[in-house]
Image (cartoon, rainbow, N blue to C red; front, top):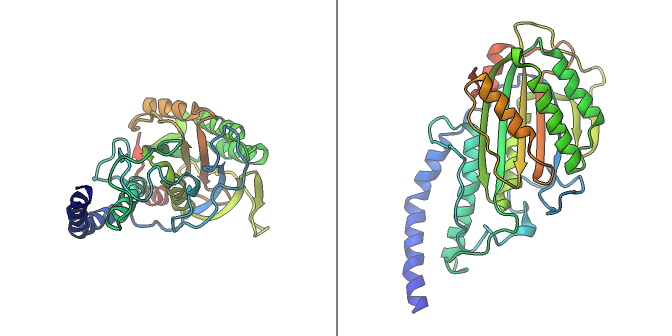
Length: 324
């Protein structure tokens, strides 16, 4: 009886995959924004671990491995992975198909990847399409905040570089301190806020690391070079010794700051359309506790001496920014 039921069901799923998934994939790829030209040098502070379930973790596992998939979160397989479907499939909070940008696209693709794995498992004669056990740590919230500030907030760059020199990015407590210091530094410059954007979504644990890493790579690709870098407890000097960190000094230019946060628990981040909403969003991000913080990236530009970020370059590199 069970076998006679599964066979038509597999045929139905195969038919759906052949007819609907190509259309879905085509519509998804229309959401990808073109990669902007490199705008300016920048700096980066980051770290984290998706491989430990304890509040403290060892540095070094974040950002490693291949981006091709398969290896991420392998120790947690079976929750949302192959053979069957995990429910519910989680989309970005407030996600819409209109103008979702690269962040929404990558979050959605992570969920679609889990769906495709389930389809392959079902059609390949794997587990029945019941409800598999959930991953031990459940879904992961991934938040992204981007700000465009007037370059007169030059001491913000000094604060970020100071944090890069002193931060303990090899522990969750150290990363939480970086997150607090960064959000506080941004909160101290309300007169320089011009543009902002915030987005948040949830992905299955098994897809969280790959999704976070791809978001990080998308942001880092906007930099012509990384002058200040502190990641997983390791500090790297710019390979070209003639390139030195410097503060922006042009009143008509901008400083761009991106925060990427991965948390075990939902992050109640709302869209930002005003200075008051941005102030509240920064407070929400800064309040993520160390016990929930899985990974963090702080990326800013410009960072090299004499480097500037003009308004046109800012809006080309960060098309989702909204004027406050």
